[in-house]
Amino acid sequence: MNSYGRKFRLSVFGESHGTMIGVTMDGVPAGMPLKESDFSMDLKRRKSGGIGTTLRREDDTPLIISGVYHNTTTGAPLTIVFRNQNTDSSDYEKIKEWPRPGHADFVAMEKFCGFNDIRGGGHFSGRMTLCLVAAGVVAKKILATGNFEGSKPVKTAKHHAISISAKLKAIGGETDDKKWETLIKEAIKEGDSLGGLIECTCSNVPIGLGEPFFDSLESQISHLIFSIPATRGIEFGDGFKAAEMKGSQHNDCIIDKNGKTKTNGAGGINGGISNGNPIIFQVAIKPTSSISRNQKSFDFVTGKVEEYSIRGRHDCCIALRCPVIIEAAAAIALVNA
Ligand SMILES: Cc1cc2nc3c(=O)[nH]c(=O)nc-3n(C[C@H](O)[C@H](O)[C@H](O)COP(=O)(O)O)c2cc1C
Image (cartoon, rainbow, N blue to C red; front, side, top):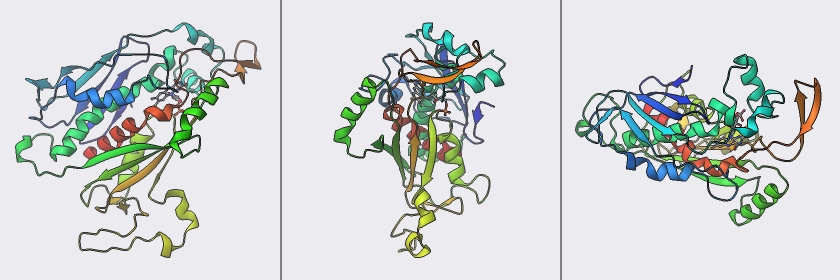
């Protein structure tokens, strides 16, 4: 199903080139100040416009249609919509015959028997992450006020002030950010794309979020992170390097009665439960699959592997737009936990 969460539940709806996209959140506490301009900063961070991002420009203006009265949350389901205004669906007919390699076209065609909306990637589009970012703004507000109850007025809540920050660490394996622009320009010239690595840190997380088993905090965060299209991997703390380390290197020495550790190889989570240290994880974002240089794949009309170039407006490096989406995913997971 297209919904996530128990205590903080959201569902997203819409398609890239449909009338609008949106998100409905349930479990939002009543009495929280919320207005459309609160979304501006995070929505702007996700926007296209910089080098390496798509030429599609949308104003991304949020419209709150339920759950807020007099600029304050009511506790009822909160729905926010965004109109799609700058669409050009002319380049998408070909993918009915030749599903793009690396994209969701083939699986969507099979699973939904060809009834899915293919325009702009339809419901699989990166545009849907606008809804995640909007939900993330609400989740960050809940984390900042410390009211996770979903019913009690905010003024009675205990203040935790969890903060979340994600940043781009590498593009195409290059960690020196001064070289990124040249790398991107080269990839654009070659009609190719680039992947990237993003690191996210969640600070002031109280001890005890998450469960030992199926709802481990890593699983809850990963569940949301893998809902971001183009995610290829996530690792917490030392991550995959832990497989090469010795226990004496990977173990985190506890240095005070609050559980503070000298190192953070666990990434702030032990036994599925937050340990009070910062939660640190990295996310690998793949290179965009829609590239303009020729690629081979199966053509369902000719019945042969054929070579084509993909047209349309696409991001060259999706990772550039992802830090704020990843922050949103982490915030939603923490509120739910
Ligand atoms: C912010 C954002 C922008 C994206 N832009 C594009 C794009 O311009 N072209 C494209 O082919 N894929 C783009 N994607 C990725 C596709 O949506 C994704 O690759 C596709 O749905 C298949 O899913 P998968 O890569 O997770 O298997 C974008 C993803 C995000 C998060």
